[in-house]
Length: 472
Image (spheres, one colour):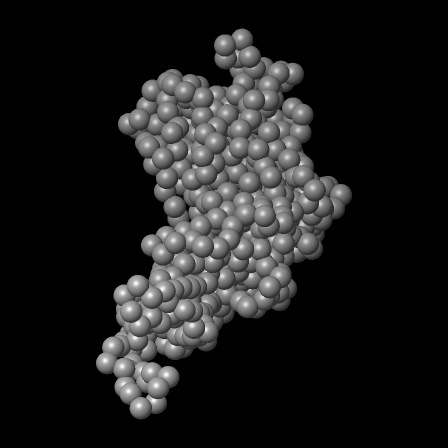
């Protein structure tokens, strides 16, 4: 700004005539900057060292358009910090060779960048690349911008569509879940099952599990000493909800009366909630490493083969339990009919599989401590579609959050894209059905997959508390 003031002083320095037209002044009328608050600058003049300056009319200066700040780029939602009433955002700032600038973060419903009906936070200093905008409403779709601002004007980022959360799931559990259970096999107690809906147990029922006592309290012990390749006949929690997006159902392997099979399978119940919450507290039976221990904790339709998420607890054999998490992104619509050669992610069962491994150093799951795993799902209508070389790719817009000991360690999506693309409700060959099947869930599948680890018989983990819900 001082450079601009200097230029104005030089431009306004002139020799002036005296009131007597016959004589020229030999002195220079000296301009003085009295006030310089852009875009207005007030200039005064004096003709002697002691003469006070008299103010001129303000001179208005406008920056040329090329002085406007460049638009912020790489604007992205930080889902780890966003909530049901806030938008957490990161961005990359442009070149600061322009006049001094700040940033404004703003969101509104169906708005343009220059709309006034927005919620905003302004005067974010240059050099900052993240912010949290609070005051939003839960369950609302917003159009959001990051705006670079200086005296020359405002420059907007590309719009970002953001939907606030509506699910508020607990991230811990202290329920005495198994207090009234009978010691022994959990199957058939208070809605827990490890048989399919026809009473069959195809795998190694009753597996290596039992209600037992630990520190004078009933708990459920389970290991993978006896594994399975099955799904509908594994240990499964009681049914709640169901939860799913509008029009979703429990597409499982039995009909509405639960007594006979259908081909194709009929739905068991329609979704009544868009939120599914679950949490369990567990600890190691041996309080030491159990190499090979593994147990899946998977939101699913009870007594079915259809899952909507995948979480696996694995003993790392050193210092605790790691997590393996899978969601499905960019699932090829043509995966069902593609040749898998050289394109394994587009094969039916592997299509779009996206794996995240979280080590024990991040989970905090130790051998001699109580550990809490919580999984929440917010089901949202629709699907995200993109194009790639003539193919249609699906990515779910459902929101999955996974917590370890109360800390958010994963944000992703469900497997809905898998079902949109593959429609796997009858046996191969695909495609089986022209309509996508919207999957709902109502339980947690505790699945010990083969290969079995017989040395873990009677060991594994104690599940001391478990809770699930499908709040409206």
